[in-house]
Image (cartoon, rainbow, N blue to C red; front, side):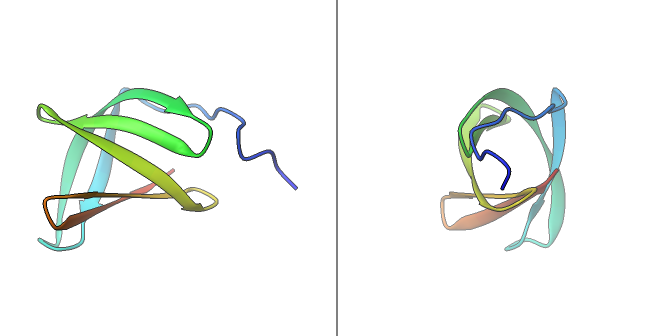
Length: 69
């Protein structure tokens, strides 16, 4: 089983999907720790939590954002 705390290579800009608005947006990578990736959408910090290998989800103001790495 792969270690969930292992760091992965993440680009500085990441395309994520807003499921509520059915649109793709770009976020800026800030940091990663364990199964969490911290990013910024414009100036808003988002915490993406790993839900399965390569898939991370964040919620903000009632909207869901999905990141696939």
